[in-house]
Image (cartoon, rainbow, N blue to C red; front, side, top):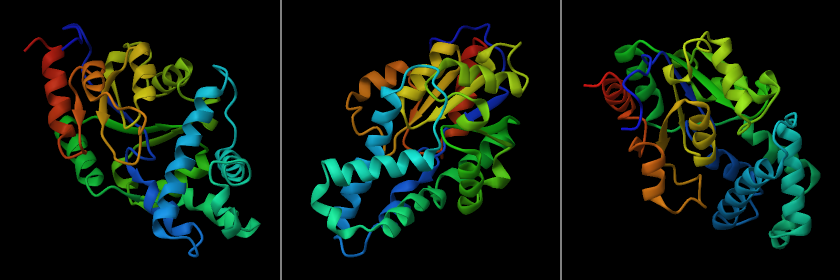
Length: 255
């Protein structure tokens, strides 16, 4: 593994939220107009989600984060009015667009997440934080609807930190706020289902674990690259996260 033997002990785990921990797809599909087929709703949800990531990548580094509800509405209207999903625009009204946007505030956790995070906390004694783009209101709604509040210590939104991923400053500010800024970023691990997030976190010095989710990173088709970029720490779910973090710690200790 590439992490040097002098790396500090792991003290914190930062989590991306939507996609990584939460099944956003089911929530959004349920909220889209019932007059559309399930296949059409699923397809629109996936295209909408990808448009969000494309929007992130198009923003200048360090730009102040925009309210995520505003972003989601703007992107959905664009997909329906300009393409590539003008074929389903007839099914939407202003009210149904609002309902679809609000669906991003109510999600269930993937079945593996709660037990996986509980094991991380119990076996490693680390603190667990959400570090994700979006508003604090969004994160409060999601941590409640998902039932993950007992296994998460703090929520850090891009709104709260004043910058959005993948800007390096968002990771640095989060580290400072939890008291890891002086110890060095190697004492923290970023866990995400998004390669762009982990690339940015690793560039700052955090250790990384990639979680494969069928709903996300649809444009990341080189699995071998993902394995190399994350030093082999790639998982299909949270069930093995505690063991991976133990191996990561052991490798940094030179064992």
